Length: 171
Image (cartoon, rainbow, N blue to C red; front, side, top):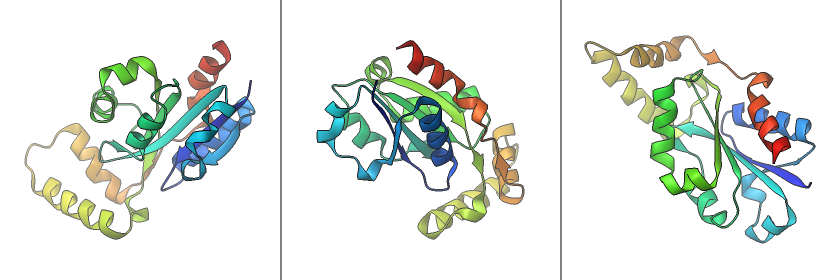
């Protein structure tokens, strides 16, 4: 079986998961920007991984369009250790129901380190931070986001790819 792991990673967490998956599955590893649609037929299995930024998976619309005729495994990597509501929000924001039925989706915990954010995104995040700081009666999730500004989190662990590896071996 010939497979490839495609990824889009800004801060390295998604890239790390993609690297581990490629090692465990003996798949090729490539940044999504270097993959062409005409190459799809060259692979039996394709996995795409992306970080999540403000509930949006990087390049997901392009991926869904490119792979509308071939089911693939998709994983997202975000800052929390697996809060179900946030995982559902990621699914709802990035996929239609029929896309989730066609492709196979997995969530992998990443981490939050706002010191790595640059440019316009840093500007937006700082506005968001100020709004959250002024908010009364913050939710637990909002408190955790604020905590991320002073205490970076890192949940990336090789053990989290186990379900994806098992799924690929079963197909």
